[in-house]
Length: 425
Figure 1: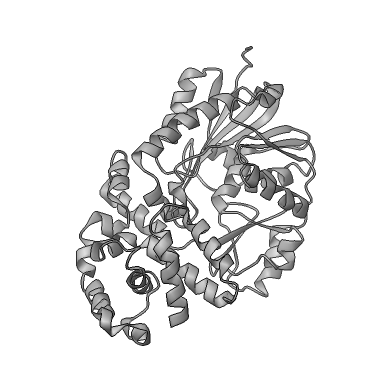
Figure 2: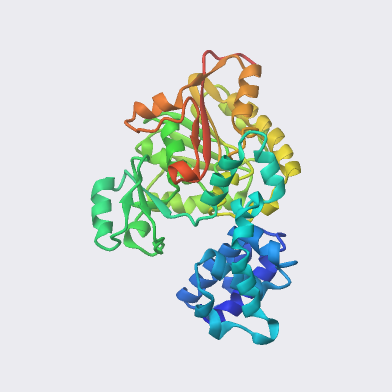
């Protein structure tokens, strides 16, 4: 880290730490304006800014209003999150602002930090209180520490273009650290996160960036050639693309979303992947009249519901400060509405997959239990059995429940439901 990079990082943090906008939006907007910054500069700024978010509880314990003192915040992030020694930063420190003394004090308080659950887990008080309803302190600490680590880069091999073993062998000649993901059958993991967006295998559609947990959701959908599938909350379409490849480009996938921009991002990805069986469609809400034409016709419906995103804190650490009990209460109601509307599309004997990237039972098991109580025509299938049938050795019980500490994926939840018989409207 040089002085130039430090100053830019401080500028980013001054906006990012107000939590008025998503952190990745703040960062990309800033870097877009700084056209003279090189690749290494951008990497250093991004890594340090996100380290500040991951270790914000410790920083805010020693620094009032970190966004106002963003230069000290950036220095603290280098020490706490990127393992810099104070001696390595000597040339950057401003003596007039007591920056060396500040960093020394920060390091001296290490034992104090480990004695408090919120600084030891790097989780804010509101979230700890929410988690305490279902988890003990050791589990909360384990969760917090696991999501305070940066995520690796996971990609999925597009099976229309190649097989994982062959693609992995090719990639390992350039990236020796690349490994097969332990659970997802088409996944490859890069612990060192190389930039692949200009790599030939990415440009020709062989590789698609997708977390291993997200890949496993597509495996639970289990779509087959010629079926009608609905991705009810498609977003930018990572799971849609995985399902399209699963169907060998045969059949029809409807990719619904309320955000036109997200669906617009899906279209070039479809083209790159060589998929022609996906039909993106913007809807106004889960009750859009255009959905009714599919009532009772879909073989598979995936509801990757809007959620708190608390399973993705490795990638989106700002969500700890942008969510609240109030926003989660609203999401829970929205999830119920969407799941109910999506269930009407499922054909007799068809499959409904409900998923979130949350770790909160209120958004997960409780929602499924609520749905089954009100929809007895559906029954719960066992996720571990469905995965075992695909030779995936992963048993988290009847629900898929991935957590970062154990599975080294984002935190994902999924339940697979099957319609026993179609109930006429």
